[in-house]
Length: 117
Image (cartoon, helix red, strand yellow):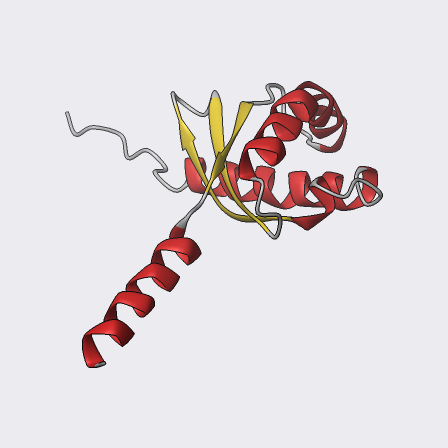
């Protein structure tokens, strides 16, 4: 008997939905916060059977430690607001992770420019 096809895109769709809703929550509820107003969500992945969503962010602030602490402190409130906005039975746990892609790209550009000199 052939195995039933599972929808492998479901995790991506949930992660994308969570990313969009959390970005709206940050915009709506934390616009006056100097650290969190500079946060941009740049990606999301789901893990653990859709129980966890990792949200990747970039911040205009140079103090990424302070931004991470502020996001960690606000996670419970953000998740509560997320539950109110999602029409699902279960709301995944969320974790914020700093995305240093732009920092690494700038460092590579700097190294390449130094090679030419």
